[in-house]
Length: 350
Image (cartoon, rainbow, N blue to C red; front, side, top):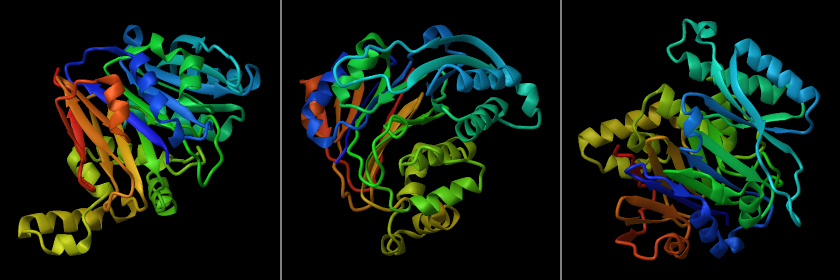
């Protein structure tokens, strides 16, 4: 079920959240009212050099004190505040959303090639596994994730999504299947610069999870989509795969297709499957992965979930449904249905 929609302005021009909120009004049937969320890139220009850590607190006593003591040991908190919310009707504040703009102390990981990122990931693991009543769910620079249990319009009004601006947006309407709906399990999922929205099911979750744990990641969100964000970080950041190859590692061609390829391609995809076998994702899915300079949408290898892409001037849209895109942009110049397993990639040009 689940509804997904995303848009990138390839010139980096900002868009507010009003249009994407309206687009989801056509996809309520793809959710159950148990989870929705939005991610926006370019959300915090005044703190663009700091990691924007979004947390859910159960209360503002023990967990908050423990988190802030940990952050102060590992770096500097430039600014902190409760994320503004506006409860009404069915949408109540079950958890307290809080944000920190944080700069890690890179001397703590002096021998690491990516000190800042490694510190942030270590902090997330410590908080999410050791501090009861606290959950980090967004951790990138100049990126904000806003999610909760509710319908998309309710979650948008709860955070006043229309007040935020950015050049890249993701949004998701959840229909939980294997796990119950809860605030942390709502999409988008985020780790550092990576954000993910997903329609479908990752049936290879157990294998993917064990593979990620061998690299030091910890899955704490109780839903299969979490592994996609961590796999994107592993393959895209740590292994430096370009998006085309990352998608081919996660959703590679079948062996019989590889056997019929020219020798050069056959050798490449054989090596990819051998190297990243435990990262291959099975099941029916449509996924959009984002980072600050691109979005990449792709489906499973036989396309058991819908995905449509469209363009208008410098904007690329990827969604579950064409009608939702047309709410955001009625005058589309190009619209198509991507083939199974083939990535649709929109890159920032600036």
